[in-house]
Length: 598
Figure: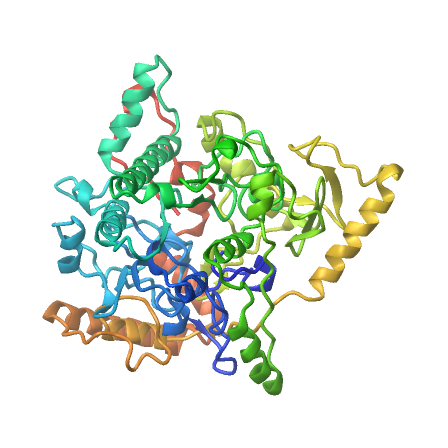
């Protein structure tokens, strides 16, 4: 989205925030390479004020990787895949991994012209949070969070609704709109944490969800996670409504273009608890449930005759870069990347790919397909509408029902999944946590379908991907062409050496008050920090723990696994439905939420 590239041409593997390869200062870390031009940089060329609120997850090894380095005038949010909605830590329950910093630090930041650093409890007051999160940096790494889903550390210490991360992000977005000088164009990039795991929400929104079902005469939720998910959807809806109202009140709506989109289909594994019905699969798969996302455009600039219409054309998430560049009157080409390639070529390092955008604005207005040629979906899938090739091993190859997850999902998880993404994001110190399971068990827990060289579907006629056409001789030429396209695309994918976890990331976090963030070339980046006595004491404990990681655990994978089992917890609980979700009986709807959520 921010780079204008297809995933396979920018970053297609989730890489930890501590990874770094010193031999490649451009692409040797997670996220968008240093010298790719970000969308906000393009809009700054056109004179826009640029502000970001929410999830970044596009790199943070250096200041140039951050939202600040990619063109945003201000940033309030977090850097990684997810954090805790109440305490902003990144424990196992948020990211599905334990990093070399033992998940000790907080991932919540504020960057602007006068300050760059962690969003402390004192700063949080500016966004409506007046209570300390009680986050314990020195707590041992574990599978369970320090706080429950509704913001309670224990039965007597609970966070108020104003300290919910999404509440603070909404306050910041409304500040941006209120303070904006309308004589200058505005780019507000609001990337809600919702509906990403961990599933957490204020109790008041759970009560609203229950009341709504009751008012409709419907049965109460039988799944704790489905209840949480429904409440979180409601919260997101209210936030978007508040932002739209603020723009209308400011007189900005009639000249505004809104893009509402997602980066992937819903995660149908427990505890992701999404539902892509009636489509097959979900996040991490190339089935329609994993790659066909909900999206709409709105705002006053949409012609009246196109409002309320459905666009049938193929649009890639990369194309939005081209759309906003086109509307802002700037060239979408990435000159900074072209210049960097001159140096990279001399050094024998991977060259940066050009932008992959297709000008889509007129296609959207005319209702025509802007991508009739083959679209490179992933290293296992291509789409030449209406035909789609799905190859290789595909996880979460199942269909969910209209009410999902449910008690049956919870009770049967240990037998046939869908379990957490073991093959992708469950990691220890940057490496996948290999449990030594036989392939048959992995297939069962992950609902893997082995698609070999590729199955063929007509997704216009068969959006649920039920009828495989790969064995039908009438489609032999289409099948052959798409297999050839996929092979050609895969010869050209962008796959630099992203490096390995480095303890430098941890030690820089300690220096700036216990916040993850840039750790390379940061000498003049962070604002000065005066550590409190509590932070100094936390750092002494952290240094001792991290020295053990660095000198004892990192050199020996066997010791890492032994440490994990002894100090963190029994990994087998990840395959028990009751670990992640609760099968409710009507009398249990007000239970104290304590489920583990990843």
